[in-house]
Each structure stands twice: as structure tokens, then as C-alpha cells.
Length: 142
Image 1 (spheres, helix red, strand yellow):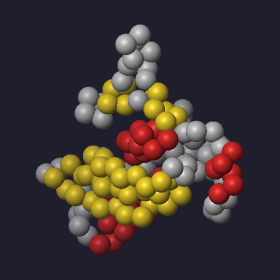
Image 2: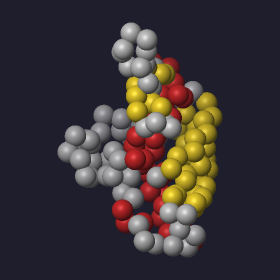
Image 3: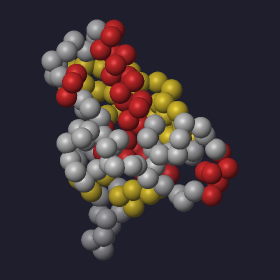
Image 4: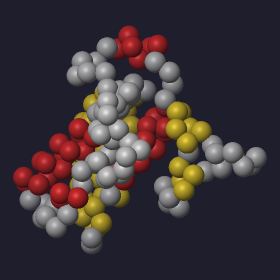
């Protein structure tokens, strides 16, 4: 299934001036649940805060597993399970997989840095992104 975010490999900055503001439902990363307004509706965040939610969700979704998502949504993380995280080849493959996953979103222009921490059995990604709204950093457990 084609992805509505895909715009090709070139960046057309004029396109971002006319593109709608990026919006996403607010997410409580600690509780792993939506954030609600006082009236019971789900809060909406915009711009880089919305991109942080999208990044978290896309990296938590195993690619090709769920029919509700486009084929290029999600991270094929299962292939890294059981491999040595600090092995240079695996680290490069993981970096490229994460970068490819994130660059599907046209609001993300570049992935400048990805560092990986392993805390016991947890993998934590530290990301530095350049979006149409500026620089954004994020720490995600995958």
C-alpha cells in the first residue's frame, strides 16, 4: 500500500510553507496512554510535539505486522532481537533502519544523530531530528 506521506527523495521547501500543520493526539509517554482534556476529549498537540508522538508510535510498531498501517510504517525491529547491540555491523543496520523509518514522514527532513544505549534488556534510542519546524531531540525505549 502506498504511503500518503511519501513525496520522493528531494526536499521542496516551498511545499512545507503550504503543507498543513502536523497534528497528533497527545501522548503520555510515562503512562503509555492518551492525554485527555478536562471535557474528556483527547488533547491534540502540533508541530514538533506532534512529531515526537508520531516518532514514538512508529518506532513502537513492528513493520508489516498490522494491516491497518501502510507498508512503510513501523520499524522492522525483530530482526535485531538476540544480536549484540554494540556490534558495529548491527549498530549500522539499526541506525539505517531507524533513519529509513523516520524519513517516511515528510515533516522530518533529516536524522542527524541516533545513539543507542542498552540498559539491561532495554534499548534506548536518543534521536536528533531536523523537522520543518526546527531541531528536535527525543529519547525512546524500544
